[in-house]
Length: 268
Image 1 (spheres, rainbow, N blue to C red):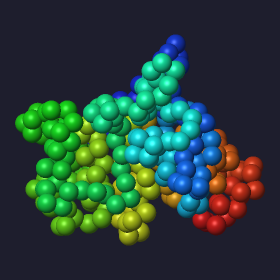
Image 2: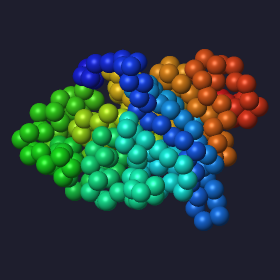
Image 3: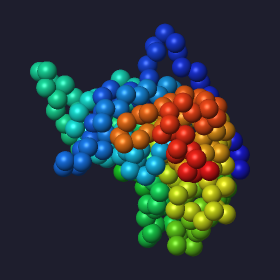
Image 4: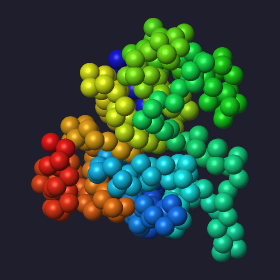
C-alpha cells in the first residue's frame, strides 16, 4: 500500500481557526442526557482519539459533529460553518436538508459496520457519492477512485461485490469511499470493533497512513496501541463528559484521573 496522497499542511497561525470546535454541546434522548456539555477544539491536521467505556458518549458526539444527531444545547462548528444550524435574527434555525448535505461533503465518516451497498460493486460504491453529492460523472471520479483502491491495497477488487470481501476489506473500501469525496475531516466510529482480530491490522495500517498524510481525524477507538502511536491527543470521556485529555504519553502513560486509570486497567 502506498502512502496517502494528501501532503501535511501546517495550520496558518494567523488564522488560528480550528477544524472542529464544540462549545457546551449537549445531547439527550428523552430524560437520558448522553452529552453533558462537551468543549473541544481539533486543529487542522490533528489526530484526536476519543476513548472511554461503552455509553460514555463518544459515538454520539462523533455523530453530532456530522449532524447525524441533532444537539440539544451548545454549538458546533467545522471551520467557520456552524453545524446544522444558522443564526437569523438572534435565533437558531436548522439548515435545509440540501444545505446539510453540501456541508457533509467535506466530512468523511467510517462506521463500525461498513455500510456498503450490497447490490453495487466496489467501484460503484465509490462512484456513487461523488455523483449524488458533487454531480460528478463516473468518468470524472473513476481515476481518483481507482487510485484510492490502490492505496488501500484493493486494486484487484474493483468489480467485486461486498459479499465477496472479508470484513477488513469491506472496511478499507469504506475508507476509500469516504476519501473519494476529498473531505477536509475524517470521522471514525470504532472502525475495527466489528472485525475479527486478524483483520484489524490492515485497517489500522490504512488509518496510520492517512494520519501521516496530514488528514484531520477524530477516531473513536478501543485500540490503545493505535491511540498511543498515532494520536496527537487522547480524550477520555466518561458519563457524557470529557474527564481528561492530552498527549498519549500523558493520558495513557500517566493518567491523572482515577476514572481514566480504572478504564485503562480494564482494557489492558
